[in-house]
Image (cartoon, rainbow, N blue to C red):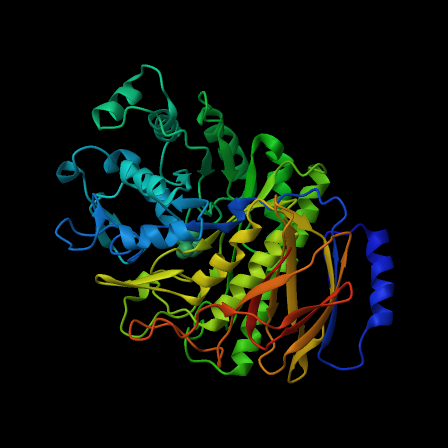
Length: 519
Ligand code: AHR
């Protein structure tokens, strides 16, 4: 059972109602949606993405050769840009990841042929030619229509280097750095606001202790200046999944000097980094284990928020889940350091569940970034030469975009269990919101691989007449979109919802993600 966004008294009252309501049949669920004066906004930035200099994400994914016959602006491929525009990507994180703490921004500006090369030691020791740098990334963001989120180098960079990067990005007056920017073809500052002070400083970003990193954050962020029209949202390296001590120390020692604290958590099917599990071949036992590991996000967000509440009861510091998603073994025959994996219906369910979790915690979770946008980990787009495809995960972001900047509606769900062997999980996962026109959107995931669930929904304090919906499902949880058949897992019109009196009754098929619109 999950209760979200209700004060304990209300939750108890509603719970008692639903316990009475609890159906006899195993596949019935009860949902209550509370429309009374919703106050929390679901930040559109929860729907962010991440692009690292890793494998074929930047090179091939966005940035192609200048002789490529693809439609492009400079060397940015426009087919991928169009796909990202359609789902209203709100922000894009760059240049890493681990790469960020070895990246020296000055190597990526100026005449391309003169830019120094470097070895990308984190990701396969490939040579990075720095042809895609600050100007190219910010041009990409402007084409997509999204906000940039830049991660600065704390691990191997200096305070001065970070400080000067921000001056180069954001200063409109006369200075050596703004002059250099103009010489490189950009007159006006970009006014970047999302800025990461390092990445995974507990690991690839410097192997620091939380105490040491707290001091580093204070030092680096002092010189990460605000310029007019560019008040920085400084994001601190946060915990590695369940490291609550890291959160405690950062909140105590840094507190509201940071705009946000990041959280990284990946769903590993097997739970082991050594043999993670295949992206495309798995049985129900492994599917169940993956969903169980996915649901850990609920616990992580809840428990880190509780630690943060202790120091920041007004919830001013954001929890920024700036790396999340499923991480499997790479596809056979691909470079193990390039992290290229296929994307199945299972991944779409994982996306739907995580986005529901973030929505329901919108008071604390104010931004998130799926790892990674093209050709790496849980991608929404895969490319092969001039070809590209949209993954099942892409379609979930498309369906869920209606939640962006809408008001969160508190929900309470009493779900049947999805049982495999002697283990069980709540089968149904939900979030709901109301947009500025008054339309209500409900996103639901049924992770049960065998049973549909009938959900009787009480919608309190909202008048509505019609219901429409879209559904993403397929016959098997292993189903994928391929370059040969791109439309195996695509959204269809959902006809399984109807109004009965004041209630909404939904028949949610097994293995499905559904988004409903009530007007
Ligand atoms: O997303 C891949 C890597 O995972 C990132 O570079 C790093 O931050 C994390 O460990």
